[in-house]
Image 1: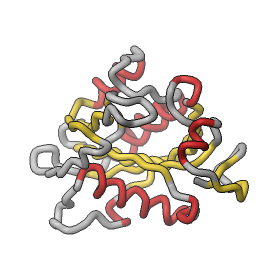
Image 2: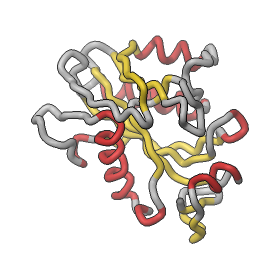
Image 3: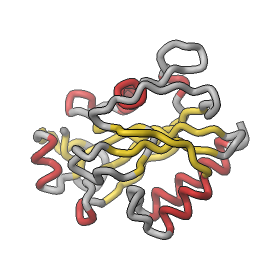
Image 4: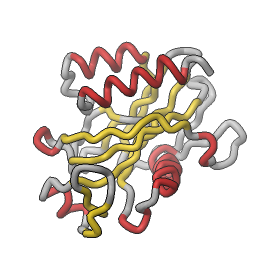
Length: 188
């Protein structure tokens, strides 16, 4: 991964994932939240017990690190699409692969989570509208063990109560997440 200092601008240093996580270096990742605005639902995935960060916890619909050679912001979207395919096998409304235009960029958040079992990432967060009743998945069992749709408010309660079955999120992330849901996703 590319390593970063105070802003998501590369330092020009590349290290292997294992070393970046061990050394608590800052790097970039993408998060994709599948949302069903009509029913106020978000999709969670349960992380594999083999994951090095937050194993066996409920988490973002799909997520992944941006590889060093993928450093541009356009590659953030490409990483998001790749992770959707790898982890969930998401089939879009048109029964074709998800395109860059389907993803709604929400925000980028610095999240210092190495001290609590995660990693230090600048997280590019996207949203993808899906119908929870018709969306189909082919779960990539290497990273994900199951998925479930839950109410937005249930996720908010889990985060705020520090529910240990759910991956925690930093306060700025939670604030931006629910702002995007309420102000941009619901109005579509």
